[in-house]
Image 1 (cartoon, helix red, strand yellow):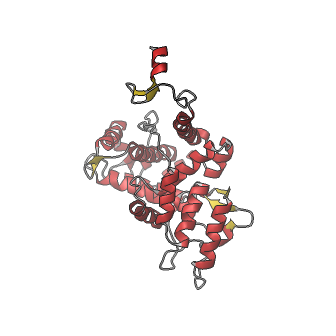
Image 2 (cartoon, rainbow, N blue to C red):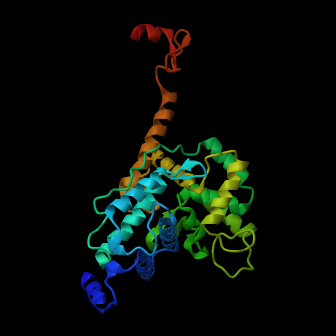
Image 3 (cartoon, one colour):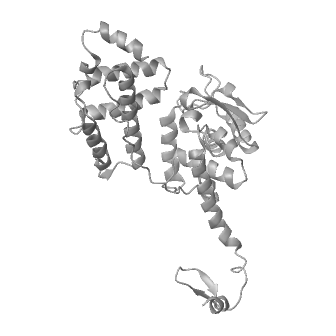
Length: 336
Protein backbone atom coordinates (compact mmCIF):
# COMPACT_ATOMS: atom_id res chain seq x y z
CA UNK A 1 0.00 0.00 0.00
CA UNK A 2 2.86 2.41 0.87
CA UNK A 3 4.48 1.80 -2.52
CA UNK A 4 1.17 2.52 -4.25
CA UNK A 5 0.71 5.77 -2.33
CA UNK A 6 4.27 6.90 -3.08
CA UNK A 7 3.68 6.37 -6.79
CA UNK A 8 0.50 8.39 -6.51
CA UNK A 9 2.40 11.12 -4.70
CA UNK A 10 4.94 11.38 -7.55
CA UNK A 11 2.12 11.96 -10.04
CA UNK A 12 0.37 14.48 -7.79
CA UNK A 13 0.72 18.23 -8.19
CA UNK A 14 1.82 18.54 -4.55
CA UNK A 15 3.07 16.21 -1.80
CA UNK A 16 0.45 14.57 0.40
CA UNK A 17 1.82 16.39 3.42
CA UNK A 18 0.82 19.67 1.76
CA UNK A 19 -2.76 18.56 1.24
CA UNK A 20 -5.38 19.81 3.68
CA UNK A 21 -6.79 17.69 6.47
CA UNK A 22 -10.18 18.02 4.75
CA UNK A 23 -8.76 16.44 1.58
CA UNK A 24 -7.15 13.68 3.61
CA UNK A 25 -10.35 13.04 5.52
CA UNK A 26 -12.35 12.81 2.28
CA UNK A 27 -9.83 10.22 1.07
CA UNK A 28 -10.15 8.37 4.39
CA UNK A 29 -13.95 8.20 4.11
CA UNK A 30 -13.71 7.06 0.50
CA UNK A 31 -11.49 4.21 1.69
CA UNK A 32 -14.05 3.35 4.38
CA UNK A 33 -16.89 3.27 1.86
CA UNK A 34 -14.86 1.12 -0.52
CA UNK A 35 -14.35 -1.36 2.34
CA UNK A 36 -18.12 -1.45 2.91
CA UNK A 37 -17.98 0.07 6.38
CA UNK A 38 -21.43 0.55 7.90
CA UNK A 39 -23.37 3.79 7.44
CA UNK A 40 -23.25 4.26 11.19
CA UNK A 41 -19.43 4.10 11.17
CA UNK A 42 -19.24 6.64 8.34
CA UNK A 43 -21.68 8.95 10.14
CA UNK A 44 -19.65 8.67 13.34
CA UNK A 45 -16.41 9.71 11.62
CA UNK A 46 -18.25 12.61 9.94
CA UNK A 47 -19.60 13.81 13.30
CA UNK A 48 -16.22 13.53 15.06
CA UNK A 49 -14.29 15.41 12.37
CA UNK A 50 -16.97 18.06 11.83
CA UNK A 51 -16.55 18.85 15.52
CA UNK A 52 -12.74 18.80 15.18
CA UNK A 53 -12.91 21.25 12.24
CA UNK A 54 -15.32 23.68 13.92
CA UNK A 55 -13.96 23.75 17.46
CA UNK A 56 -11.77 26.68 18.48
CA UNK A 57 -9.52 24.04 20.06
CA UNK A 58 -9.54 21.92 16.94
CA UNK A 59 -7.94 22.01 13.50
CA UNK A 60 -9.34 24.17 10.65
CA UNK A 61 -10.20 22.01 7.60
CA UNK A 62 -7.78 23.94 5.34
CA UNK A 63 -4.77 23.13 7.57
CA UNK A 64 -2.03 21.27 5.72
CA UNK A 65 -1.38 17.78 7.04
CA UNK A 66 2.33 18.53 7.42
CA UNK A 67 1.53 21.43 9.78
CA UNK A 68 -0.38 19.33 12.30
CA UNK A 69 1.56 18.43 15.44
CA UNK A 70 1.15 15.85 18.16
CA UNK A 71 0.90 18.65 20.72
CA UNK A 72 -2.07 20.19 18.92
CA UNK A 73 -3.90 16.86 18.83
CA UNK A 74 -3.20 16.16 22.49
CA UNK A 75 -4.51 19.61 23.43
CA UNK A 76 -7.73 18.88 21.56
CA UNK A 77 -8.07 15.47 23.21
CA UNK A 78 -7.63 17.13 26.61
CA UNK A 79 -10.24 19.73 25.66
CA UNK A 80 -12.75 16.97 24.92
CA UNK A 81 -12.46 15.78 28.51
CA UNK A 82 -13.36 19.26 29.78
CA UNK A 83 -16.02 20.02 27.17
CA UNK A 84 -19.59 20.38 28.40
CA UNK A 85 -22.89 19.63 26.71
CA UNK A 86 -26.08 21.04 28.25
CA UNK A 87 -24.12 21.93 31.34
CA UNK A 88 -22.59 18.46 31.78
CA UNK A 89 -19.21 17.04 30.83
CA UNK A 90 -19.11 14.46 28.08
CA UNK A 91 -19.25 10.88 29.30
CA UNK A 92 -15.81 9.20 29.48
CA UNK A 93 -17.04 6.61 26.98
CA UNK A 94 -17.97 9.36 24.47
CA UNK A 95 -14.57 11.02 24.83
CA UNK A 96 -12.84 7.66 24.49
CA UNK A 97 -14.71 6.88 21.26
CA UNK A 98 -13.94 10.30 19.75
CA UNK A 99 -10.24 10.00 20.56
CA UNK A 100 -10.17 6.49 19.08
CA UNK A 101 -11.73 7.81 15.85
CA UNK A 102 -9.12 10.59 15.56
CA UNK A 103 -6.30 8.16 16.35
CA UNK A 104 -7.56 5.73 13.67
CA UNK A 105 -7.54 8.50 11.08
CA UNK A 106 -3.98 9.59 11.86
CA UNK A 107 -2.75 6.00 11.84
CA UNK A 108 -4.21 5.67 8.34
CA UNK A 109 -2.82 9.10 7.36
CA UNK A 110 0.70 7.96 8.23
CA UNK A 111 0.33 4.70 6.31
CA UNK A 112 -1.06 6.60 3.31
CA UNK A 113 1.78 9.14 3.29
CA UNK A 114 -0.08 12.21 4.55
CA UNK A 115 2.20 12.55 7.58
CA UNK A 116 5.86 11.72 8.14
CA UNK A 117 5.11 10.00 11.46
CA UNK A 118 2.12 8.47 13.22
CA UNK A 119 1.31 11.53 15.33
CA UNK A 120 -0.72 9.68 17.95
CA UNK A 121 1.23 6.42 18.02
CA UNK A 122 2.09 6.65 21.73
CA UNK A 123 -1.11 8.42 22.81
CA UNK A 124 -3.73 6.35 24.56
CA UNK A 125 -7.45 7.10 24.73
CA UNK A 126 -8.64 8.19 28.20
CA UNK A 127 -9.66 5.33 30.45
CA UNK A 128 -13.32 4.57 30.95
CA UNK A 129 -14.32 4.03 34.58
CA UNK A 130 -15.81 0.57 35.03
CA UNK A 131 -19.24 1.07 36.53
CA UNK A 132 -21.48 -1.81 37.49
CA UNK A 133 -24.71 -1.33 35.56
CA UNK A 134 -27.70 -2.64 37.47
CA UNK A 135 -29.74 -4.97 35.23
CA UNK A 136 -33.52 -4.86 35.19
CA UNK A 137 -35.19 -6.57 38.12
CA UNK A 138 -38.09 -9.01 37.79
CA UNK A 139 -40.50 -6.29 38.91
CA UNK A 140 -39.11 -3.79 36.39
CA UNK A 141 -39.46 -6.35 33.61
CA UNK A 142 -43.11 -6.89 34.59
CA UNK A 143 -43.73 -3.14 34.45
CA UNK A 144 -41.97 -2.96 31.11
CA UNK A 145 -44.32 -5.58 29.65
CA UNK A 146 -47.32 -3.67 30.95
CA UNK A 147 -45.99 -0.55 29.23
CA UNK A 148 -45.62 -2.44 25.93
CA UNK A 149 -49.32 -2.59 25.08
CA UNK A 150 -49.16 -3.70 21.43
CA UNK A 151 -48.23 -7.12 20.04
CA UNK A 152 -45.31 -5.54 18.20
CA UNK A 153 -43.95 -3.80 21.28
CA UNK A 154 -44.19 -6.95 23.38
CA UNK A 155 -42.43 -8.94 20.68
CA UNK A 156 -39.62 -6.35 20.56
CA UNK A 157 -39.19 -6.30 24.34
CA UNK A 158 -39.14 -10.12 24.41
CA UNK A 159 -36.55 -10.36 21.65
CA UNK A 160 -34.24 -7.77 23.21
CA UNK A 161 -34.43 -9.39 26.65
CA UNK A 162 -34.13 -12.93 25.31
CA UNK A 163 -31.31 -12.45 22.82
CA UNK A 164 -29.32 -9.34 23.76
CA UNK A 165 -29.58 -7.80 20.30
CA UNK A 166 -28.39 -4.26 19.68
CA UNK A 167 -31.11 -1.78 18.66
CA UNK A 168 -29.73 -1.54 15.12
CA UNK A 169 -29.60 -5.33 14.80
CA UNK A 170 -33.22 -5.70 15.87
CA UNK A 171 -34.36 -3.00 13.46
CA UNK A 172 -32.53 -4.73 10.59
CA UNK A 173 -34.16 -8.16 11.07
CA UNK A 174 -36.04 -9.54 8.06
CA UNK A 175 -38.82 -12.10 8.01
CA UNK A 176 -36.50 -14.72 6.55
CA UNK A 177 -33.95 -14.20 9.31
CA UNK A 178 -36.20 -15.60 12.04
CA UNK A 179 -36.92 -19.33 12.31
CA UNK A 180 -39.76 -19.73 14.79
CA UNK A 181 -39.72 -23.53 14.53
CA UNK A 182 -36.09 -23.79 15.65
CA UNK A 183 -36.04 -20.69 17.87
CA UNK A 184 -33.03 -19.15 16.17
CA UNK A 185 -32.37 -16.09 14.03
CA UNK A 186 -29.71 -14.84 11.66
CA UNK A 187 -28.32 -11.47 12.77
CA UNK A 188 -26.13 -9.05 10.85
CA UNK A 189 -23.92 -7.37 13.44
CA UNK A 190 -21.12 -4.83 13.55
CA UNK A 191 -18.61 -5.00 10.75
CA UNK A 192 -21.13 -6.85 8.55
CA UNK A 193 -20.50 -10.02 10.57
CA UNK A 194 -23.33 -12.52 10.56
CA UNK A 195 -24.13 -14.69 13.57
CA UNK A 196 -26.92 -17.00 14.74
CA UNK A 197 -28.70 -16.20 17.98
CA UNK A 198 -31.19 -18.45 19.82
CA UNK A 199 -34.33 -17.34 21.65
CA UNK A 200 -36.86 -19.11 23.88
CA UNK A 201 -40.44 -20.29 23.62
CA UNK A 202 -41.88 -17.19 25.26
CA UNK A 203 -40.31 -14.98 22.60
CA UNK A 204 -41.45 -17.37 19.88
CA UNK A 205 -45.01 -16.95 21.11
CA UNK A 206 -44.77 -13.14 21.23
CA UNK A 207 -43.38 -12.92 17.68
CA UNK A 208 -46.05 -15.33 16.42
CA UNK A 209 -48.82 -13.18 17.92
CA UNK A 210 -47.35 -10.07 16.35
CA UNK A 211 -47.17 -11.69 12.91
CA UNK A 212 -50.71 -13.05 13.18
CA UNK A 213 -52.46 -10.10 14.82
CA UNK A 214 -50.63 -6.89 13.95
CA UNK A 215 -48.00 -6.93 11.21
CA UNK A 216 -49.69 -5.69 8.01
CA UNK A 217 -49.67 -7.84 4.89
CA UNK A 218 -50.00 -4.96 2.41
CA UNK A 219 -46.37 -3.85 2.60
CA UNK A 220 -43.52 -4.38 0.15
CA UNK A 221 -40.68 -4.60 2.67
CA UNK A 222 -39.70 -7.88 4.29
CA UNK A 223 -38.45 -6.23 7.48
CA UNK A 224 -39.80 -8.01 10.54
CA UNK A 225 -40.68 -4.94 12.58
CA UNK A 226 -42.43 -1.91 11.10
CA UNK A 227 -43.39 1.49 12.46
CA UNK A 228 -47.03 2.44 13.04
CA UNK A 229 -46.85 4.13 9.61
CA UNK A 230 -45.92 0.80 7.99
CA UNK A 231 -42.37 1.96 7.24
CA UNK A 232 -39.13 0.19 8.13
CA UNK A 233 -37.69 0.74 11.59
CA UNK A 234 -34.19 1.94 12.39
CA UNK A 235 -32.12 2.32 15.53
CA UNK A 236 -33.65 5.70 16.33
CA UNK A 237 -37.17 4.26 16.26
CA UNK A 238 -36.15 1.69 18.86
CA UNK A 239 -34.55 4.38 21.02
CA UNK A 240 -37.69 6.56 20.86
CA UNK A 241 -39.78 3.54 21.81
CA UNK A 242 -37.62 3.01 24.90
CA UNK A 243 -38.09 6.65 25.89
CA UNK A 244 -41.85 6.14 25.89
CA UNK A 245 -41.51 2.92 27.90
CA UNK A 246 -39.23 4.73 30.36
CA UNK A 247 -42.13 6.99 31.32
CA UNK A 248 -44.92 4.42 31.16
CA UNK A 249 -43.03 1.81 33.18
CA UNK A 250 -41.45 4.37 35.53
CA UNK A 251 -37.91 3.12 34.88
CA UNK A 252 -35.85 6.34 34.52
CA UNK A 253 -32.63 4.49 33.59
CA UNK A 254 -34.24 2.49 30.78
CA UNK A 255 -32.62 2.40 27.35
CA UNK A 256 -32.30 -0.29 24.70
CA UNK A 257 -28.77 -1.28 25.71
CA UNK A 258 -29.90 -1.91 29.28
CA UNK A 259 -31.96 -4.84 27.96
CA UNK A 260 -28.76 -6.20 26.40
CA UNK A 261 -26.99 -5.87 29.77
CA UNK A 262 -29.92 -7.60 31.47
CA UNK A 263 -29.84 -10.49 28.99
CA UNK A 264 -26.09 -11.00 29.41
CA UNK A 265 -26.17 -10.81 33.20
CA UNK A 266 -29.05 -13.26 33.52
CA UNK A 267 -27.43 -15.56 30.96
CA UNK A 268 -24.39 -15.86 33.23
CA UNK A 269 -26.49 -16.19 36.40
CA UNK A 270 -28.42 -19.02 34.77
CA UNK A 271 -25.18 -20.92 34.19
CA UNK A 272 -24.58 -19.97 30.56
CA UNK A 273 -21.15 -20.56 29.01
CA UNK A 274 -19.02 -17.42 28.56
CA UNK A 275 -17.84 -18.39 25.07
CA UNK A 276 -21.44 -19.03 24.02
CA UNK A 277 -22.43 -15.62 25.41
CA UNK A 278 -19.61 -14.02 23.40
CA UNK A 279 -20.95 -15.65 20.24
CA UNK A 280 -24.56 -14.65 20.96
CA UNK A 281 -23.62 -11.02 21.68
CA UNK A 282 -21.35 -10.72 18.66
CA UNK A 283 -18.27 -9.53 20.55
CA UNK A 284 -14.80 -9.97 19.06
CA UNK A 285 -13.07 -10.58 22.38
CA UNK A 286 -13.83 -11.76 25.89
CA UNK A 287 -12.98 -8.38 27.43
CA UNK A 288 -16.53 -7.01 27.26
CA UNK A 289 -18.05 -10.39 28.09
CA UNK A 290 -15.97 -10.51 31.26
CA UNK A 291 -17.65 -7.27 32.28
CA UNK A 292 -20.96 -9.11 32.36
CA UNK A 293 -19.48 -11.79 34.60
CA UNK A 294 -18.61 -9.03 37.08
CA UNK A 295 -22.21 -7.78 36.88
CA UNK A 296 -23.50 -11.28 37.49
CA UNK A 297 -21.08 -11.81 40.36
CA UNK A 298 -22.28 -8.65 42.09
CA UNK A 299 -25.91 -9.66 41.64
CA UNK A 300 -25.11 -13.14 42.94
CA UNK A 301 -23.64 -11.52 46.07
CA UNK A 302 -26.79 -9.46 46.55
CA UNK A 303 -29.02 -12.49 46.09
CA UNK A 304 -26.79 -14.66 48.24
CA UNK A 305 -27.32 -12.47 51.30
CA UNK A 306 -30.91 -13.72 51.44
CA UNK A 307 -29.60 -17.25 52.05
CA UNK A 308 -27.23 -16.43 54.91
CA UNK A 309 -27.38 -19.40 57.33
CA UNK A 310 -26.84 -17.21 60.38
CA UNK A 311 -29.29 -14.49 59.40
CA UNK A 312 -31.97 -17.14 58.94
CA UNK A 313 -31.68 -18.23 62.58
CA UNK A 314 -33.92 -16.16 64.86
CA UNK A 315 -31.73 -16.00 67.98
CA UNK A 316 -32.38 -13.23 70.49
CA UNK A 317 -33.42 -9.72 69.53
CA UNK A 318 -32.32 -8.04 66.30
CA UNK A 319 -30.24 -4.86 66.48
CA UNK A 320 -28.70 -2.60 63.86
CA UNK A 321 -24.95 -2.69 63.43
CA UNK A 322 -22.80 0.15 62.08
CA UNK A 323 -23.55 -0.93 58.49
CA UNK A 324 -27.29 -0.99 59.01
CA UNK A 325 -27.62 -4.79 58.93
CA UNK A 326 -29.54 -6.73 61.57
CA UNK A 327 -27.65 -9.29 63.64
CA UNK A 328 -28.75 -11.28 66.65
CA UNK A 329 -27.57 -10.10 70.04
CA UNK A 330 -26.20 -13.58 70.77
CA UNK A 331 -23.94 -13.45 67.69
CA UNK A 332 -22.82 -9.94 68.58
CA UNK A 333 -21.79 -11.24 72.01
CA UNK A 334 -19.84 -14.04 70.36
CA UNK A 335 -17.90 -11.85 67.94
CA UNK A 336 -17.37 -8.75 70.13
